[in-house]
Picture 1 (cartoon, rainbow, N blue to C red):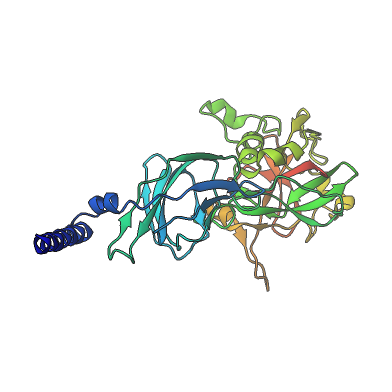
Picture 2 (cartoon, one colour):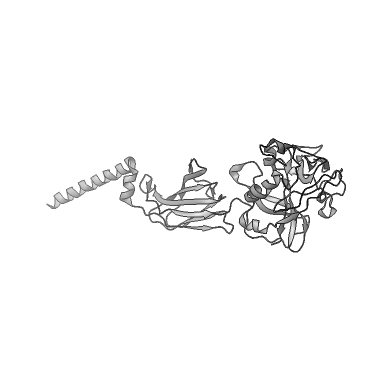
Length: 377
């Protein structure tokens, strides 16, 4: 009887082995339930600027790695460059992907999700074991966690202190597409400090950031011949809506002052500059361009290096005209001023040599160089 029991035990052991082998190579899902690898415990934390989220996996017995599943909107990258990623677009501007992260379950592992665009993300993780069982065996997924990102892209911050900044310095504030490569996110925007007091400072973008017509009339044909004052032009609306919301997070927007913008008549042609406006973001004027306190030449028709401007690759891709001068390596461009030109349907520009074009233009190839007053801190 004892020998029969031993024989029966050996037969059952062989059958169990066969089942496990079949599960390994014929049905991984079935084996996962048999082995029951526990899912990891996960927690989510944020960087100080909320542009990245850290996902931490707790210690997990019998796991030699994890698989992350994320569903979200916008752009995202991880700090684990070597991990294979299976991307699937959702068709509505979002994405989902799984990422294999090799890490022994006896240790905690943190993966940082960076360059997060604003939006809501859903994440779940499961453990896997491949080395021990000879085939990839997964645990059940963890419960799905949801987190919301309110900021995006490198360059954004939540706190600034410009108290030690001086006139002529270059600061970084906000972020906007500049290199023309959308896959790597927006780039930090550099600004030249033109003026400063104890509470606020006037800044102008170091580079031309985009190429936008000064005024784009509606389908009403009569508007093609209207006086293109700063007050009613479409570029003013774009700067204070689309650009303002794209380039600055909420913390930065709180630092941008609402400014009474004086719209003087053209000094030479006497064409009306229209009513004064209140703006967050604006263009500089004819008079500001000859203000030596801001570092500019006092003459109109002269080469002024301080007024010359290099467009970003993105601005060029949007149609900004630019050229390389004799013995130069950088392209320079025309850029808009808010002041009227010699006739009311044109606006003034700064020329490629840094001179002021008093006649003005109505061209679509002129770049945009925003300006604004921001709080020192």
